[in-house]
Image 1 (cartoon, rainbow, N blue to C red):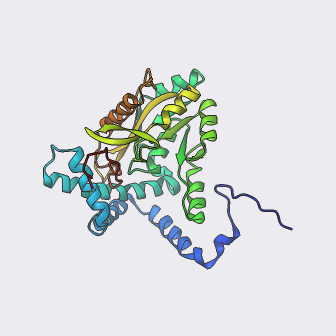
Image 2: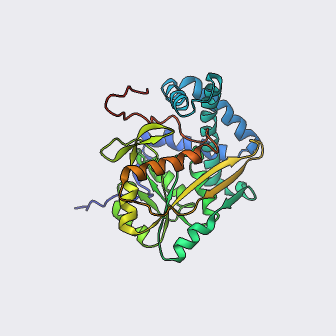
Image 3: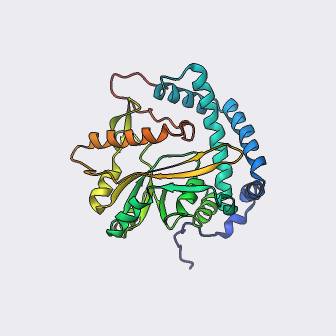
Length: 311
């Protein structure tokens, strides 16, 4: 009698050779071909595909437009529309940049810089783990790769529903991150923090009030997760804001990692005050490169009682 063994992330299964997966294999080959194209072609393709996505993905477009209207009331209607379109272009650029990070990492040579690395180094020298408070950037794993040129990051991830895609992405990310920690694996997350690891964690999405509290984000009440407060209390890790973004002309981009000083007196006894503080930090980061954020997520889907729906 054969004994069932639990699937391990990144593990190949013979079932991946079945016909139902052939389309994905063909798609992966196409992506690898795209990864070896010159950047001059890649960024023009990204512009074409980004504009196509903006025009065809109505629900995502409407969400993006509404998020930008709410968060940047100083922008005119034309500015909101143009920046919303650029969000989709930046997302497609991020796909190509991620492919480069996975398959052609030498492309980034001479294009990266870091500011504030000493904040991570000091915390780890003191024997503490580091929880890097970041955002859902359109740079995707390209940002992780740039970070990995200066320190050894781990990442919290959500497994893909398709097991073949999950295996392929996990293996590609293994070349960038020291460890990949399932978002449901709290024990693993705690263990790595206690072992002094630096872990990229993004507390910037709306998971409802069962996992958070209402706190202002760009001046608008938003459901804000509080799980990182518990992690920091249990592990005594340092909370250090992290932001990475693309700079310069698209024809010759540069990539910068901004590491801010450790948050002192964090977490405090007030979870709403901590959530407000976290949101303000993320807001200040996003103002550096507003369109390099996944604004097509419904950041304000949870609304306080008596407030109208934003979407």
